[in-house]
Length: 215
Image 1 (cartoon, rainbow, N blue to C red):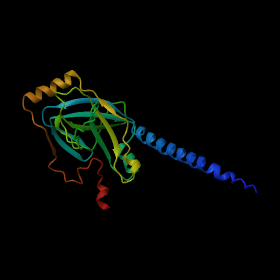
Image 2: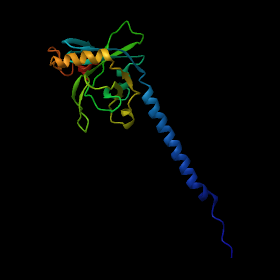
Image 3: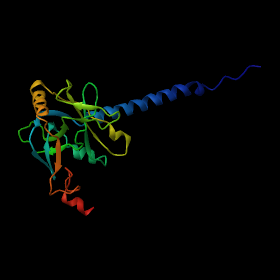
């Protein structure tokens, strides 16, 4: 007696599963790449605030001292981009080499910068020293280190794909800027960030609109 040959489809079943798995991985990978690139951010300027300065952005107003302010330009409206995912835009600042979290103000602040070549501009506030907010906790001091700052943007909705961070925007901490930071540190300069007294939490959101109160 001879055995009947096994159906051909069983031979192709593992290959079919592998092809489907690879196709799914390619789709997911493509989605990650697309989400990382869609922010289209680039550095416009960087400066250090060694004295109290009020930064107004939308309905938000902050008085800041002892922070590096990086202005990022883009052809994309970060808030519209994040709102499409039911979220708000957030920024993460780290040291470029060690990836130490710098505890930056998490909201990119929309600025009206007419001189820039980009349609939209956002201010990112980074303290010059402190302790990282991410685990493990690491103390940092931009005035004594030798690393540049890396910024990445993302949305913060519940869907996993919305947490994909943008490509990094490098903020060079050159010798002149680092000397400013060191001079401020030698004087015992403080770090301070305060909301404008006229603000309440909702009204100080950078993307607040009066119509939001109706919802």
